[in-house]
Image (cartoon, rainbow, N blue to C red; front, side, top):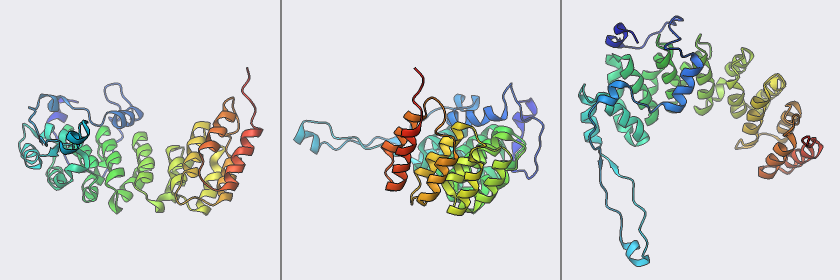
Length: 315
């Protein structure tokens, strides 16, 4: 980050800036992976912020332990919301406070309005990223309207953080922003938006996801499999054999696990269309699916027949 960026206060933007997506040798896909695997990581500012205990100790119940000679399970410590709110109010402890909200998750949902207000006023980019991640962790639907514009921010890491958070905050504002994210110039945002629509449960986004899949946003396939109606699933099935084998398998498994279940004929057509019976491990893979499948008998029999027909791996 340049010295100019450090002093910059980040506010939502409504325009795409394609320059600067690659920073410090990273790339858009790297941003997505880093976000998914390290969203709780601290920045340098967070690491320097003083730590203070936020949890009030709660003594474990001992009655059951005395009667059985075993220790009773401890209750999780109660979150000290007042102390955490005080940390969010002070510039020198704000970064650490945001990290603590992210770690507390839904238990800190009461603090979402306070963080939303901070974002509305504007924060430096690093703190804006931490704030967006904290709101995503609390999963407060009210946060979607505040987070949504950041999907189009000029900073790549902040765009990705916003797309990731909206999958948890959900609601109409999240769905609109994630659908727009499917058309982003940023590959990480496109991928996160496609996955986010699945977790947001936006069934109305299936046509947008199908168009994204045709533009090689392969993450859209699993989301379509999770959200499609029977007729829309046929549109997905028609595209299955064009996808990589691992994407086909993930999509078919998602369709198999749907509750309520998809119609039997849809699932059997998906199995026939996908190339899941190809490859050296196909037999074991299909046998595993058949053994764990708890759905209808026709689909289970189809899985069993496909497993029998699959070739054994070469010695």
